Image: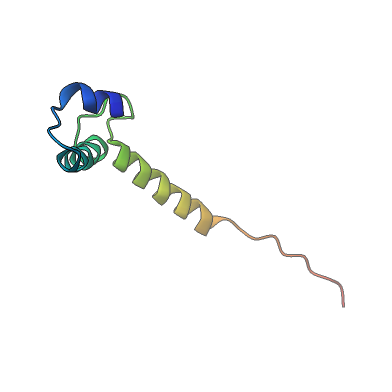
Length: 69
């Protein structure tokens, strides 16, 4: 990601570079047109996995062992 950023940005100083890099990462993860993750951005893919994991966690049955009286 850094190489892609450096290839397209002209960075006049370190503070401007940090600000531009933060903006680049945000756009990369949240708004860029996805290129192969089921039509989702990386952030959308992460959220989808988080939601799916949460649903599976809630629906798992815990094993209960009963001991005879």
